Length: 279
Picture 1 (cartoon, rainbow, N blue to C red):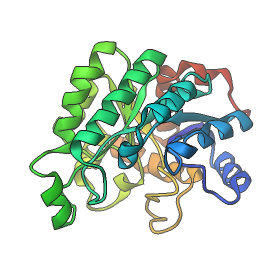
Picture 2: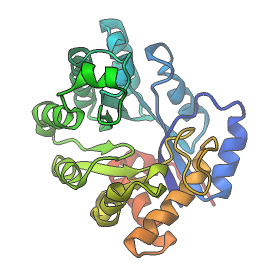
Picture 3: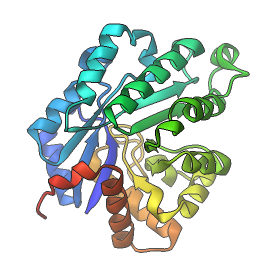
Picture 4: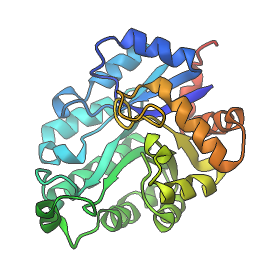
């Protein structure tokens, strides 16, 4: 069985078909990311989790929406995080890529506030981190010389590592040093379809070497469809392509990769073991 450890299910017009495709591909569980289109709709993933036993959920305020991390919306997140079907808080973090994203101070304040909510709930966090390295010149001027990875890891060291709780570096796209620091901070590294892209040589090296007990696979659907489906609308079933590619990088079989990533998801989220679809 495979698990898609990060997908956005809110906007599929025919979710029933999407879930059927996932089952046919051997995907037994899905972690639906509850950011919605902003805090007003971050509850939708949890509604899906209550309606479908194979779906579990998160809830969080994406860094692009950090300016909306008001007291009211943080209180809503706190209530959602307390739900047993909500496994984690996220995706949260820092995004220094888009020009119209909130300023650095606003993003960091929202990130810290949500880490505190996750810690109080005893739930892991799932992290979004995007740097300004490939951003347009105006965005570079706005965010540099700050580095999203350095800022992220510093905030984690100060506000998260002392809790002893784990987390996921979603769609890991960093380098070997950032991977090592993430692992040392107790995080799992989750690999999405971009690991299959020819230019992703650094990500591929990390995927090949990350410890077997700290690796996950995901789609980030409907984004980042893997090769050979790049350019199509992604869906959870396509995690099989990413898993097969990562297995080849690691010199193991697809079944072995599925077994270890499923075991890792269960170790990270023990409550998810309470329901296991019958294949």
